[in-house]
Length: 213
Image 1 (tube, rainbow, N blue to C red):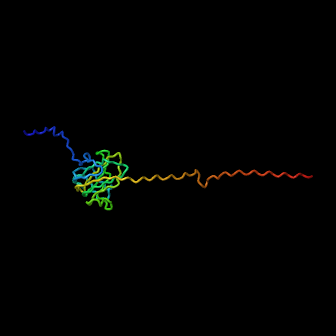
Image 2 (image 1 turned 120 degrees about the vertical axis):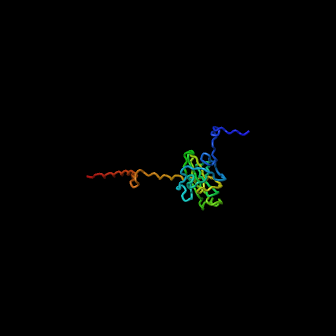
Image 3 (image 1 turned 45 degrees about the horizontal axis):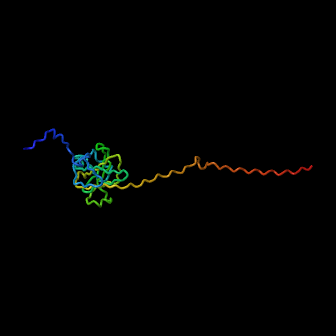
């Protein structure tokens, strides 16, 4: 016979699962390399644009539907966090934007780094066949924070993209300068003179001649 419909309370009890990568909560675990087939719809914390973090890189930012970049984004959760090394990120596939959010949870994220277009003199620029790829160099991470890498597009552009993360060691820190030599407690021009050697004893006086009367 025909299937009986589910009771209303059963239908309401089913949780609505978010598509992977559409939000911070459903971010895709990411450590070194990931190929994404196409950008997906999603939202970012408000606001998600700080030009002072990546000036001149043609980073458009994504505020929300109908504003600036009404397109999809990929949420990636960085699982390999190395505070003692520099992190480099690269997105190659379409006219992409890179966002990096930092926080102790999904409810307390702040945009801390971004990039719109890779610089032409960057060696990785020649390795991507698509112009307007995105690169983030020398990002420093904290051990007590979570990091989310979000891939968006210039004013909502979407498309397939390959995202790579690589670490490189930080240069060794320079040793602190040696302290200056300690100075005497008195100015050099007022240094006390060394004690004079004791004077030799005076020779005894010769005996007086006898007196003749």
